[in-house]
Length: 221
Image 1 (cartoon, rainbow, N blue to C red):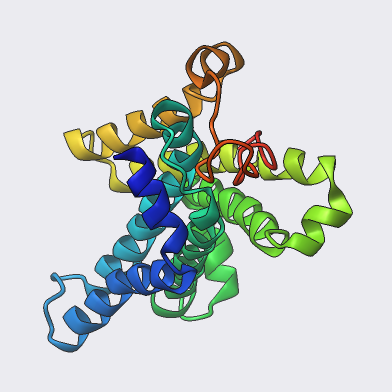
Image 2 (tube, rainbow, N blue to C red; image 1 turned 180 degrees about the vertical axis):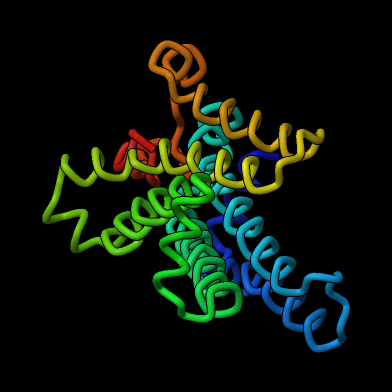
C-alpha cells in the first residue's frame, strides 16, 4: 500500500499540486463575485487567504513526519506546498494593505502598534519570504549547510503564524486550538530524541539501492 502511494506520488506532476492549491483561491473569487461573503467581505477575504496559507504551511510541515512515521514520501512535492503557502501569505498581506488599509502607510503603522498580533504576522511573513526566495537548487548549492539552517526558520514562522491567527480571532474555539495543537505536535516530532525514536531505517521508495528521494538531502526539515 505504502509503495503504491509512493509510486503514485512520484508520478504526480508538480503542476497538479499547484492546480489543487489554486482551488481555494478560485472558490474565494467565485464567492466574491456571487456575493456569498459575510457582512464584512474584506474581513472574510483576508481571513480565508490567511487561513489557506496556514493550512498549506501545516501541509509543508507534515511532509517529514509523514515520511518518518509511515514511509509515505511526499518530499518531492514539499517545495510546491511551501510556495503555495507563501503565495497565499502574499495575497493575505496584499488584501490587508489594499482593501483594509487603502495604502495608507501611516495608518498601517498605527494599526500595527495598536494590534501587536500584526507584528507576529509581519515577522512570520519576513521569514517565509526568505524561505521562498531561497527555495531553489541554486541557493541550495551555494548556501550548503547555511541553507538548512536558514530553512529551519519555518519552525518559528509556523508558531508565529498560528499565534497571529489565534490572537486575531480572539476566539478560543475547538478548531483553532486543534490547528495550533497540530502545529505544536508536528514541531515536537522533530525534537531530536523523538525523531531518532520514530525514524528507524528509511528505505528509499525507489527500491533497494535506489537514491534517497529527499530525506537524506534535507534531513533538517
